[in-house]
Amino acid sequence: MTAPGLAHGARARAAAALACLACAPGARAAEWSFAPTVSWSADYDSNRYFLPSPAPGEGQFLSFNGLLTHSSDVLQLSLAPFLSVQRFSGNSGTDSNNGSINTSAAWSLERSTFSLSAGYSDLSTLLTELESTGVIKGNSHQEQTSGGASWALVESAKTELSVQLGYADVRYVGANTLGLSSYDYSNASIAEQYTPVERTTFTLTAFGGDVSSPGGPGTSRNAGVSLSAERKFSERLTGYISAGYSDLDYGIGTDHSAVGEARVSRVGERSQLKLDYQRSVTPNGFGTLVVRDQASFTASRDLTPHLSVLTSLVATRDRERFFVVLYEQQTYESAQATLDWHSGETSTVDLTAGYDRTTVQSILPLPSGSRWRAALTYTWSVKPHAVSR
Image (cartoon, rainbow, N blue to C red; front, side, top):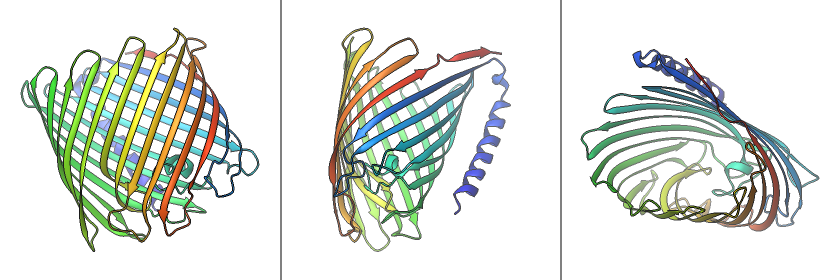
């Protein structure tokens, strides 16, 4: 297992980078802020693992989120830990503990911004695989070590150049990881942004990625270009569209796919609406690149100053473009409604009901089925406490 060593190295490199940034001359006038959040949830699920013979039951979840930030004229730092404990009744699930920590730093100069990020997570496949591979078991976990860097340069009043680099080391551990394959994923992109008028922006992007899975399908790569346009029609209505092309190389064959996104969002005084469709090339837990189609609709409405309702519809489809030996495609569909009550300045109570369905076309015995679920969640958030120095 190489994940702990990689995690240690990533943390050491991130700490060194942050220390260097903190030595910048402009980092003297600074403000520290900390905002913790604790939530407790109890749920009922008719078929948590989408088994052929459903095992309904209850679960309880206790989570902690924190956000520590440091801000000055030129330097912004953040540290975000997350801890979660999951406990289930009877045969409805396998108890598990989850955690992650993410850190980032951004250094702003007169015309450019440089940022670094690093993270480590240890999460149940019940949280990471539901929308992609469908291999969800409470006693199997995904361990991920990730890092990234970006640089943006304002070339003129209308143009901006940006470069992004990313890396993720993903490992699957535990029992019942049928079909899952550990992998390394690296990606890069370069984009030129042009804003001819105040509310319209065009962006031309070249991108590429590499997935290496020695114990699985091997190495797969993609490279492509896309052109996007974003238009703010008014203070409340925004539209976005992009179209592009991606070549895929699986070592023993090649393929290609169109990529893109179309999105419309509207923000009103008491409501918000968002409709989005996107197609992308992305890695998944089978250790290779897949073409992912995802459509979503979200809406929220404030019924009173303290009560609001939120609804969402999501449909995701992952398709193998070459390695059909594992599976052809998996489809995940979800509908959810939440009643959100702000019981105080720092606390909320949510009542959620949802329906999920997953379908897998595969020679492997992967789960296909549906479930109903309901949950009651209490969240307590402390107002950010800031200290200036």
